[in-house]
Image (cartoon, rainbow, N blue to C red; front, side, top):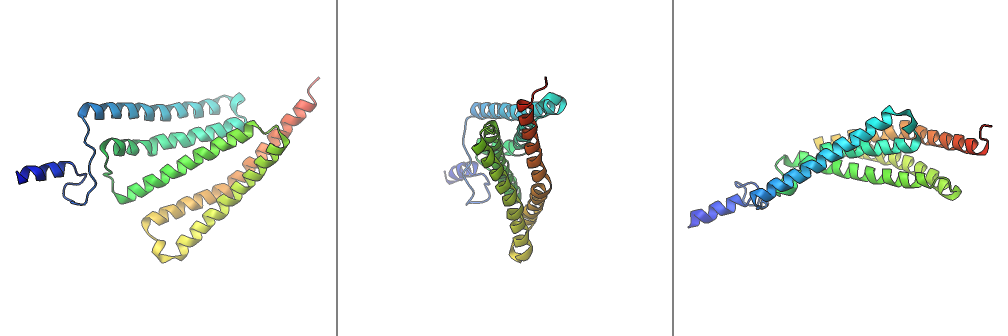
Length: 215
């Protein structure tokens, strides 16, 4: 009787050899298969749907406007989310356990948060871009973009300096975070200002075209 109870307890744990392990989700096999199929279809739709958007905007020149470039960037972010984050989240959701260790868990959580926040910022930019014809919103859009650039550059500089200065933060995970911060800092200082200038130049060309159309 005692042996049977021990076997049942082991089956319900994610790691049977660790008594303090989290309990494993106990579901019917047909329900687990249905969940895997449904989530796999969602992942495939997310990845290949956004790939189709990226290829379409890249291929057709009439779609290569600043607004569509933001949409293309959003599609790239969602494609990375679907390929690097969602498969592991699918296994964790169905099984109720994480089998890939602490380091991969931290990387997965970091990527999940980064891509999710990036998607929200892209959607905000698209919403502001749609209303850019109004002068007040147009000024607010440029102020927001400048604030985003400053936050990206100096925020990531602060992360780089903090990890480099404090020895207790110099673990392999934090070194990966420092590398990511350096990449984002370069993005904010070398790419984002020119994207803002391109947006301003495009808006000016549209304004001239509307005010002085070809005869």
